[in-house]
Image 1 (cartoon, helix red, strand yellow):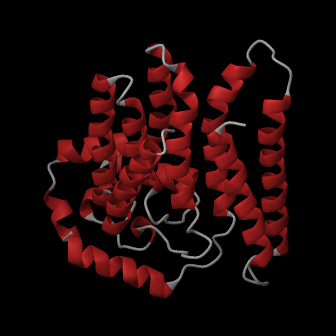
Image 2 (cartoon, rainbow, N blue to C red; image 1 turned 90 degrees about the vertical axis):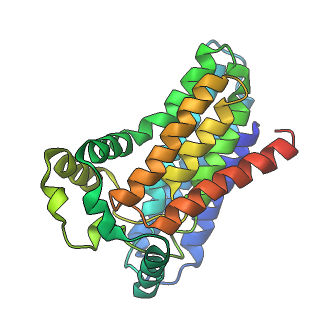
Image 3 (cartoon, rainbow, N blue to C red; image 1 turned 120 degrees about the vertical axis):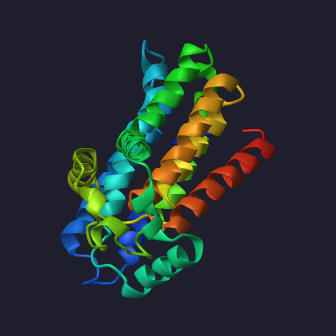
Length: 268
């Protein structure tokens, strides 16, 4: 079993155990059952794949499957979001007061706001795009290292949700004048219809985006540099667009760097 596959098994085992220990009625039984079924499906697939006899396309499937597992993990983790914590949201807003002045975002130039909305709306593409770069560069053998770093960055960010349940700023704050722009309306509609309506601390967008850049950098430095710029843009966009709190983005970036240092030191 690859390290990245073991990480996926570990995370879905964590979700299954968490669904078992969270008391009723905090998590409805129907949601618990959905978590257990999802965990059983992913764990079963991840355990079975390495044991299958060699076949054309099997290794390619294993190379790309983590992208789907990460997406699946996001929505399964979202099943734990039942009611936001007023104390948790107040804590996140206090960090915003310390780190930024959200009112200044009204003065961000329109073209910059369009750029930020565009990179945030398409940030889900950066994960498969990063691995596609490795394949294009002839480094598909680095698949396990790539997915180990990216999966860990995502799962550690997702994993706090059962215990720190908060809403993203866009779901709480009053609409701003700039929210009337067409691109901005699309962005709000996009997150409203495609997300779990819950905040992840640290920001999974920031941590995964930077993890992608750090994983690609050794094999394709030029692409790694471009992806690092995109990662920084995504982190900034998440705060400017009020999709995340400032501390979410900061800790997300720090998490990616810490994981990169740990995996590098471990020789993974």
